Length: 265
Ligand SMILES: NC(=O)c1ccc[n+]([C@@H]2O[C@H](COP(=O)([O-])OP(=O)(O)OC[C@H]3O[C@@H](n4cnc5c(N)ncnc54)[C@H](O)[C@@H]3O)[C@@H](O)[C@H]2O)c1
Image 1 (cartoon, rainbow, N blue to C red):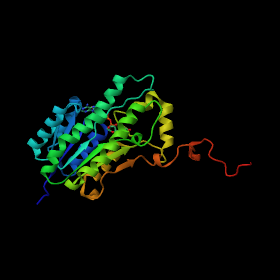
Image 2 (cartoon, rainbow, N blue to C red; image 1 turned 120 degrees about the horizontal axis):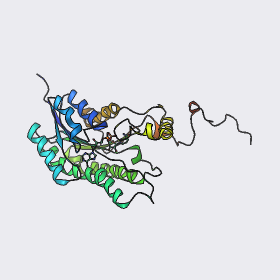
Image 3 (cartoon, rainbow, N blue to C red; image 1 turned 180 degrees about the vertical axis):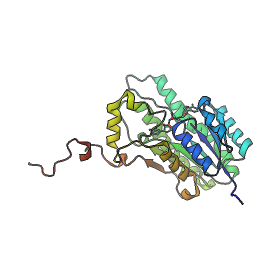
Image 4 (cartoon, rainbow, N blue to C red; image 1 turned 60 degrees about the horizontal axis):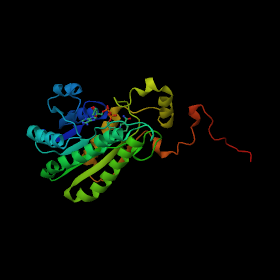
């Protein structure tokens, strides 16, 4: 007899990491509610029996409650939630307006908090469950002209660490994924509009390439799966090794000067 399908809700599922995750979960035996505010790009869900697309703006408390109600109506209480929707928000401190900062925080942080609040009662009905929030390597380190985004992603890790301490006894795990540069709708244009920046980012990754969204989906699937049953409160980095260095010394493969073997003092 086939194993009973579990149910996951994935936000930001119209594109990039969210879509790759929703598709992967559906292939691997999950029912999936694929949530996004961009309904035009959710059409892919129509071709999958066990996936339903759902329009929601995660900055709305009501929309968060409705998406969980819809998942329960279609598939029953949630076993997992991949709260992944996010937006960029570059600009220096003198350039990015406070209103634009609020927009970034409203999606990346408030949206995540509203999502957690909405999914928890549903997960509790199953007596166990798992949540992932998508942070970033920029949730672990700062970057020039990216303070709004970095701030929002640092906050996600604080949220995950705090809630893991609070809800672990309910048998609900919560973890963060910290992706490095990944080819998605969010970042795909960089190669064309800022080729030097694209090259710099590539050189900064020991694997010398950006990630495919599927490489993030596999980590997110792991984090909500029984294989990660003792992983809780963790900020899991998947960045091709970029964050383990200081970034101060370029590898010889970059074609730029590495540290000489001998230095004449
Ligand atoms: N791509 C990268 O290099 C990278 C690196 C680190 C972290 N991340 C994070 O990964 C997550 C997924 O990003 P991605 O790269 O797949 O980008 P993406 O733009 O391809 O996908 C993000 C999705 O979120 C949706 N979304 C945005 N605001 C929303 C809202 N208010 N309500 C509902 N849906 C909303 C968008 O419509 C889009 O479909 C984001 O949280 C992002 O910050 C991405």
